[in-house]
Image (cartoon, rainbow, N blue to C red; front, side):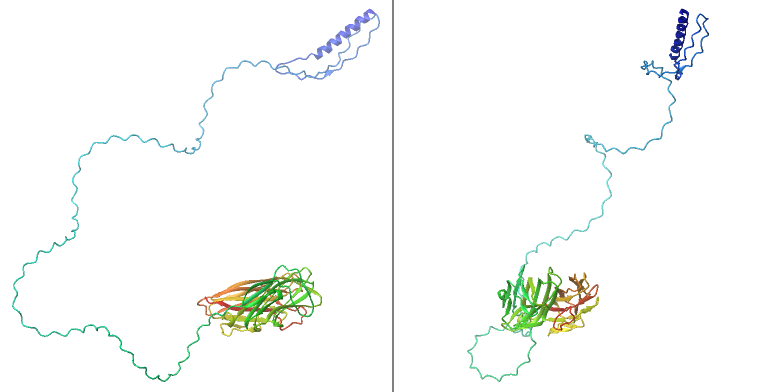
Length: 497
């Protein structure tokens, strides 16, 4: 038994030594090997039979795998620096770089002290003589010497012939007037001379008045019979006639020819057609009328009237309205009614009034509006009319008042251009009103002033649609009325140049 234990102990020492030896790493400082994995420990050999000889040593087991590399040890101290190598040859010189920008100029140095004056040089040779100068002016004449003594008088000569009679002397002053004699009998009256040309007319006395309302929201009910509009509130300027807003009228005090104008914006019942007319002395003037339809209850429509009428002394000018059905609301929100004199009782300048009553008339692009009705023509012949064209033959400043009623396609804007032709011409654009519904009428009014200058033998004026056709219409029902204007124009001379 003791021998068996000795063999077993010797075998354990051998195997354990091999294991420890396998784990001791070898190190090559130049080529350190990679450590392989550590091998497994081989099994213990069987115990030999008791009392027998020790059996042969079993084969060595495979080397186990190499264990993991240990942590890197600290870096050793830096070795001494070796000697400096020999300097290599100098490289080739590089290309010269671009010249740098010139630096700023330095400040000017202080001026040095002035040097000593040099010695005077020798005198130069005498130059050639210059040319002789011009002769100077003659000197002043010397004083006259004293007069010599008078010599003795000579003998008297023979008497000469009588000289020619000299001119008559000036007439002496007139003596005082004698007493007036008795008046003789009156002679017979001579024949009357021819009448001279009539001189220019002097300016007449201007007469005018206006009444108005602004911001009004209180209306009145009207129906199919004309009703006087009683919504004016303010008297405006007036002279020579009476403005009476309290009674909604203007009273003319002197008979004559007058221009009447009404501008009005109004609201009222929806889908209602209103007609406004100027009344003179209680009677309608059918030349002074407008017709306007409101599409919806929120609409505010505008309309205008302008024309010329003869008015007697003491007669009233008033505004009446009528609807196409009974019980309709009419609210005149803003309006101005004015009357002013022209002709003999005002200015004496020429004027003309023309209008059209043709219902549903289409005016083609670039064609003039035709005014087939005559209100008042200029008796002097200064302003004449023919086929849409007005001719003016006298210099001065002229005013044009123009208006028309239109029913263009929905959304269109009716526009009329005044083509004025004085020695080359020009145009004045008169914008129209936008039509927002096919059955709504629009009334457009405008005015402008132009000048006919010296040297213009004849100035002409036309009203034409410049870009598209213009529909003139005043009655949607088609019944029409020859007394209702769809377009009108007034031309009047304001003054001379």
